[in-house]
Length: 432
Image (cartoon, rainbow, N blue to C red; front, side, top):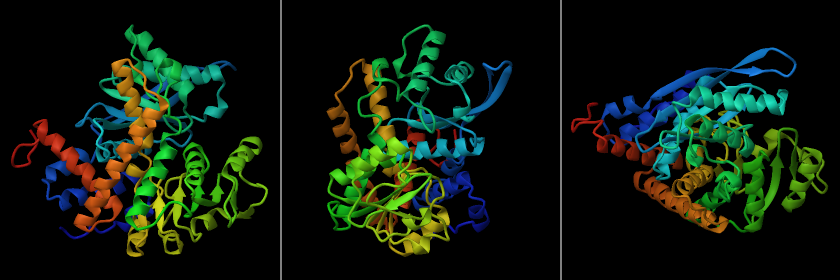
């Protein structure tokens, strides 16, 4: 094994997600004693496309919205990744997310590459008609860069099944034939997969169960704190409670609540739907957002924002296991501190992979023209995650790595194998 890669503290202070992923890539390449060429071929996306999408506003006139589609690697198959609509979207963010997707699909043994898309927009400021124009315009401008055998979009932040339905319809009108495999996460009536909406949250619980088992602990009775009560956090909290865990704290963007005896999760979900926040839930006490991250629990689930657990916060974390339901919730410097403190971090590219696994299953169903039952989808997704966790834990133990290092090692090893199999590397490791 080679020496640990030193964290670039200046880079870390800038919270550069692309740089952080490149550090993980470089470390894995050196750990596996792969040619430097592997790093060079994977450190940047193979393609980044910027578009300007015109929307005819109902108030009159047009407005251009900036959008991106970044395709990182197609070594293992067609690229795959969501499209987000958010006012803070940038090319750097989309690039980092595309790279994460490549390593996520590779680590989980899927025959897919990684991509991501985004449009800089506040969708709440658009009417339904304007939002549909924007969605269809994105597809029109990128139709030659996407497709069921090339690059497969999916929902992400502020996009949903309805928007995927518009995009699927636009693409099929443009190509003049039925192509339900163009997008995943679409409505069931258009070929969407049962179980897709809950897949990420369910997968979080499966990975936590497997990691706790490796630590000699049980999920039943474990105390759990969940930061973020969107789709992934909400589903995970409900599934944790159903498995016998004690969900003691939950937060959303407005408030955080705590109950030592455990929150009644179904009632909390209903309260959130009724009031718009977890705040004021009967029988729970309010706590600070940061306080939730430092509670003494067996499992902490950051399911909200990137960089939630920082170098400053990491020394105060008291969880035994951190399950990254969000993408990139732990900074590189925080990771090093948590590793020294023997706090296990289930990395995002494994922990929240349930969504992309079921998206893959949706694509397979569209390709074959046969829809599976929700029960079959859930069983196959759990089987895949259990296999990934076994490989992850085995790699970590064999090489003396933490779980994130092990995940990137598995991913990079598979990507390098793909490069060789395609003839993109010669025997000496030089590109061809």
